[in-house]
Image 1 (cartoon, rainbow, N blue to C red):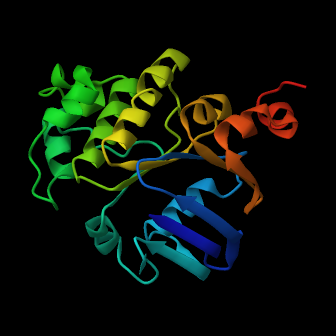
Image 2: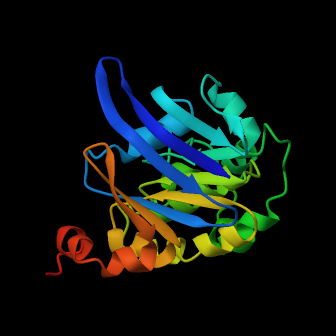
Image 3: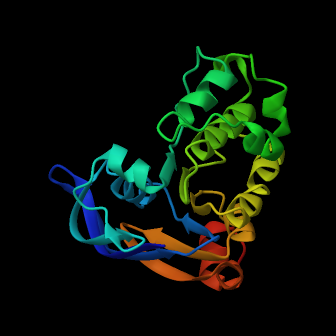
Length: 230
């Protein structure tokens, strides 16, 4: 579905990524993990048209994404849930969700309410008054309203209690099984690798390790560097 080959990217004179290779397949959860400053957010921004791809190729279902606008990339079926959620805090949950479905003219809230029943109880509440966990649920649900084939989620656990992270992250396989593959950027390496099928470890702008998530979770280097287990 998504093929990233030898991608280098950055901002202005600053290069952040070097020769990154990455794939996301149909109905799959893929984790992208690594330390702060590794370039994880930059990679998502490059894939969604918000950062410059300087070299390499990015293809979605065989079509190059290089040179396309953010809107064109969304129309191809890619949704980006950014770090910090970026909801409209003065609007209700219902309004935020409907805005998510605006380009595809999707007004059906049933699917996202089934995934996140709590949103069904908060439809008329302004999102700025909700808890961080509820806001993250709303951000993911808003992304799903565009009916994407690929959803990229940046730092799902940011600022959330572990129990809330578990509640949200356990929904990701269901989302993938229903036809929306997921590329998950996450600092909670244990949580990310526990839910993903495959994973990539990004360090200083390069892919340092990749493979099946279970194998990386058992890898001594990953356990020592990211899980604090010697």
